[in-house]
Image 1: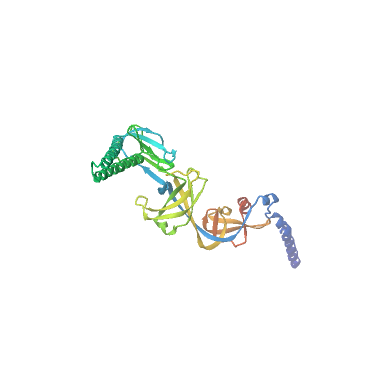
Image 2: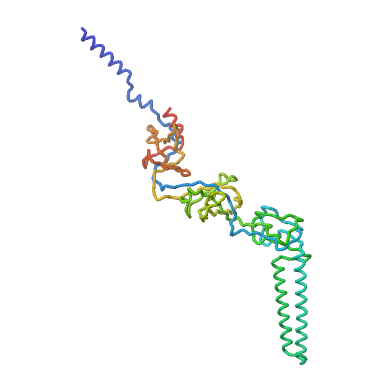
Length: 361
């Protein structure tokens, strides 16, 4: 009797357990399945090997090309009668910048008059000497001496005329300051009615062509060995945070600046639209390709949660896997993966956070 009671109890327990266990079909229905609408809006990226890139970030500034910048000095002292340009103006070569009334210029004008008179007198003396020689009233030596005096007077007149051209001297003891090249006024140290001393050593204008400009990066001592000529450079500024200017490392200044304790690196940038201005602050990224390859995926496919990095690996709409990964380095839009992925797998690049939450809540 006891044996039959035990057998009956076992049969009841087996039936109860069998009723509670879900069928295979029920497990599939309860699992996550990507809907047609979600699948249509989801994008994927293939995991692949790519050359490993490195990127270094530096701060710096925009400067004018020193080879296309000229400092304009006053060649005379005097009173500034008029200034025709302001800081930031674009000027053409030969354009009038300022006028200065000067006693020095008055002295040059007197030299010009004296030189012209000396030439006129020498010509008359030569003519008289030649006529007297023809009348046998003097020697040939007198004609040669008169011709030599005329040549000296003409040479002096030519020198004074060249001085007038160099100094842009006009009548009325006025000295004209003209632009020596086309470009922008990037510095101005002159105003109307200012008195300029004859021994002034400071420039009054700086003019620069900025069709091309320099981006100067300050490289810390610890990073000097990582920066080489030819590295690709991406430059952004506060004025244009969404615009990237591209160039290459053109020169390494192999000295340490005592003020910044850094080495300067030069990047030449095309500036045809004149967007970049001298003295703008700049963020400079230098990048290069190393001689090795590594698994790479789009950086935006990575989910950071619980102090770890994850990606959603897509097998099919019924099988999306949450995979922990170890990131080696991020450079721009690319992430290089140390472990967790294999070449050829596919990761989600959109909707991955929604799917991650649905699978891991």
